[in-house]
Picture 1 (cartoon, helix red, strand yellow):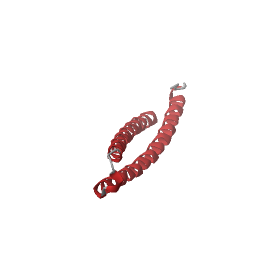
Picture 2 (cartoon, helix red, strand yellow; picture 1 turned 90 degrees about the horizontal axis):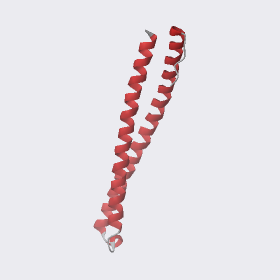
Picture 3 (tube, helix red, strand yellow; picture 1 turned 45 degrees about the vertical axis):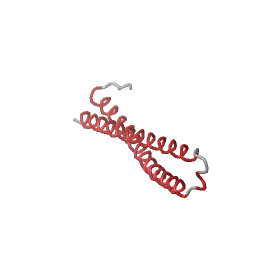
Picture 4 (cartoon, helix red, strand yellow; picture 1 turned 30 degrees about the vertical axis):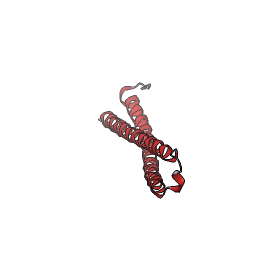
Length: 106
């Protein structure tokens, strides 16, 4: 029974890791689009003297900062999941060794 529980934990953590990685990819894509928008805005003639352009640039930078914070939070979650996954995998391996008398090589 311990093997089944550990295996379920590994599967659950792997799913969580996949979801976090997908979220990280979405954030990266959003940040890339923001960078493109900032570049396009700054590429316009006399953008620095146009108050409207300055406000747009500030808003883009604020959104990028918010996404940066989300990304850092998700990276921390990803590290925790990875650590927990490694621990559960070792537990599963040890339980298989104990219950069945052989090692699981992954």
